[in-house]
Amino acid sequence: MSKIASMKDIFALERIAVVGFSTNPSKPSHTVPKYLMEQGYVVYPVNPRAEGDILGQKVYRSVAEIPGQVDVVCAFRPPQDIPAVVEDTLQRTDVKVFWMQLGISHAEAAEKARGHGLVVVEDRCMYVEHRALERGSDEPVR
Image (cartoon, rainbow, N blue to C red):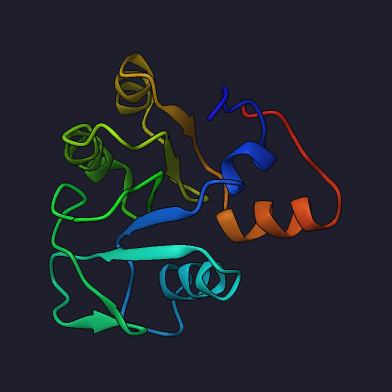
């Protein structure tokens, strides 16, 4: 794939690992990945405390153990957990985008991910950005 420069480029990717995918249907960390699945994305739940499956998808304890290709890692974890999520992500060579959901950012971890060639999105919601793209907005990645 060519260089990822916009939200459209990110949402053209198909496989998303969601770290912190919740089993609680009232939490955004459940509803956002559920929405992405409904839009046709392959979503891998990553939650070390969950077992079995979430919405019919096998739950993984880490990003590194997902057997299929992963294009995007979306983190629903508090900022203090982001460095560990980046370390887990960097064990793979196929990830292109590291996304931190709305309210989440970590400057040092973001810089480390960028240093390894990943596009980093901080403090933005995949649901909101996908919906905006459907309405014709295509912001550059910042």
